[in-house]
Structures are given as C-alpha cells and as structure tokens.
Image (tube, rainbow, N blue to C red):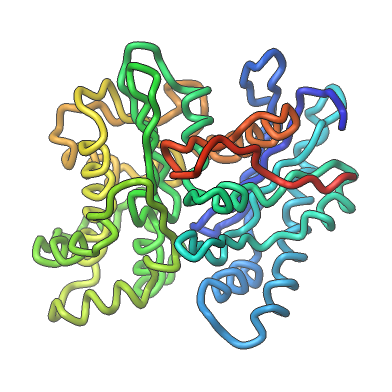
Length: 365
C-alpha cells in the first residue's frame, strides 16, 4: 500500500439518505479535512436498502444488486473528492450499509461490494470494519468513540460527543482520559418514518412539524419502558429493534393521538434516551457536542438541553472545527488510516470486545 497520508472515508448510515464522503489527511497523526461531498441516494436505491432492513423474498439477490448500486454511488462520491488531492490517495474506507446488526448472535452485515468499488475507482478499499470486533465478542458498535477521543478530547475536561443519525450514540470523553459510550437508541429513524407516513417527507426539517405538537408523557414513559434502555453498556442497536412495527405496537396501546403529538413525543424519546445515557456515564460535563443529521434539528437540540437539566451546553461539533455532517465519514477515514498503520480501531471499554483489534479487510486496487 502507498505511504500517502490521504484517505477517503465514506459513510452511509441508518438514516439512509445518501453517502457522506471526506478526503482527509493524517500526516504526523494530525487530523484534517481537505474536502467533503454528499451524494444522495436515488429513490430506488433508498427503497431497496430500506426493504432489506426486514426479512423478505429473494433477499440474497436483492442484497447483491443493492450492494452493486451502492458501490456505484460510493464511486461517484470518490470522483467528486479526488480532484482535491495533491498527492496519491492511500485508500478508501467504506463502511457499507448496515442491513442486519445482531452481535448477540455473533454477526453484523453491511451491504457493500468493496471489490467493485476498488475496480471503479482504481484505489485500495478497506471495508468490513465491524465484524472483527464482533468476532472478538464485542458489539461492533459504536466504533466512532476512538476517533472522537483522538479528535475532540480535552485533557482535564469531561466532554460528550453525540452522533444523531438514524440511531444515536454517545462518546463520553472523561477528564482522566477514559472513554465510555454506547448506542443510546433511536435518533432520527422513528421520527423520519413517522413524518414520512403522515407528511410524505423524508425528514422533519429543523424539527418544525414536531415542534408544533405536544409531548404525550404517558406515551413517552411507554417508549422509555423498552428493555433496551435499561440494559447496561456495552450495547448497540439498530433498525432490527427500532422500526415502524415497534412504533406501531407502542401506539396500539396508547389510544387516539394527533400525529404531531406523536412526533413531538418521538423527539422527546430521542432526547431523553440520550440524556439518560449521558447522566449515567458522567457528571459535571463541560459540554455536549452534537454531530450527524440531528445536529441540524433545533427542536431536538432544545429537547436534549432540557432533558439534561438545562445547565449543560449543547453545541454542534462545528465549534470544535468539524461540521456535523462530516464527522462520521471522517471517523471511518481515520479507521482506514489505523488499518494501514496496523493499529487498533476499537475501544474494548465501549464495545465489550476481548481486546483492541485492527478493523477492516483490504480490497487492493
């Protein structure tokens, strides 16, 4: 492999709206973003990936075709980023699209065709970044806390980084250098599904539709009664648990509710489940820094501030120098860099793995 310090990170998360990509430089173990790009999924690709979240006919065929189409989308993102490179690019780190995440059964599956991506781009590809942690007894998620520590930690300060994609996760960066974290539960996934059903939108822009509703506290208590929330870390979750059928089962017990009130209550669910996980893990937090799509939802940020007691600063990671929509792609670029250095990418204290592991598999150009 080339000794270049330039890497491309590609991330398509549980929100399934498209591919975020960054071109990053890790010279001398520094972390800098040179360029960023976003390629939206076509309606057909999003629908096919969404359908794979649940069991159905011809899954093997549909997954293979979707993986090929995803690789083409990834390659388009790479082509946008390539011109910004002033020297050879060492590798692409491509997460793939999670379609099953069952670490309790010993597996996690991401749709991806890394061989096709290498063929289309002419670059080395590092993929399959979760399975080694799962093989070592870990959850395979979240993987971003190690990067959050490298990028955002401040000696002597308790900081929390919250990624709110389809699923939310936290990285607690303790003042003494320790890192803890977990998937906290739903981020945007249920809110997106609900507004899609009632308004035909992919997401609630700035949380405006939900903000016009009122939180139903009985329903919120029912949501928070989900056993996942009471489980101790390490833990991870996904659409295998938090999906439309889960929401419908909860609503069946609730009686008639206005659609906007349900949305407001889903906002509260995301905020409270994140806040509860933070408060269980750390005290006297200096600030909470939010990344992912949820960082652009002001109603959700206000709800999180309130759920934390109103005294903790809740800010975007932009104040730390990284735009919220770039953090995860940058994290996976960093994991690709760690792979080439033969350095561990996981944190056993977060995932529960037996020890540090080098993450990923190489598909040469």
